[in-house]
Image 1 (cartoon, rainbow, N blue to C red):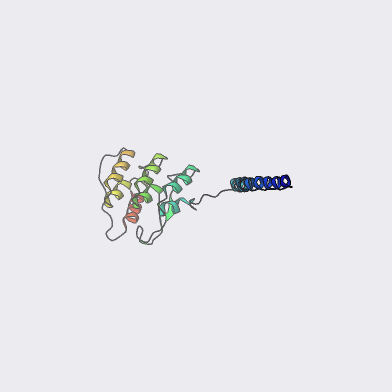
Image 2: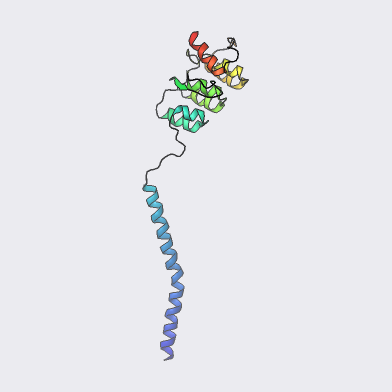
Length: 173
């Protein structure tokens, strides 16, 4: 009888020792299955902007980079409106000018790196806009990109937002 009890006890001890290992194995299998299912689902970039204008407005260099890298021309004119930068009026401007107006050095550098031209009719006063806004570093970077060493800038319309004035002047010249 003693051998039967001892055998049962041995089986019970063995079962109790094996239960944690079995539970751990089931947990690991569940975790890995969930991971594989999540990897198979299509992903959406959480920070993808709806447009280049949105990326510039939200100061998202990564978002603007994604839009430009996807084939958007960095010299293409954009419709833009901002309560401070344009006085709430809709204007047509370039990504480079908008980045200068937002005083976003990283975005200005990214646009120039992707081929934004600082000497096009719409952008040739970008350095002047940076000067008006008091950002000498952006003005220097733009002048170097345009191979423009002069600092002659036209007088802006008094009372008008600088971005609006520069955009209007650029189209008149």
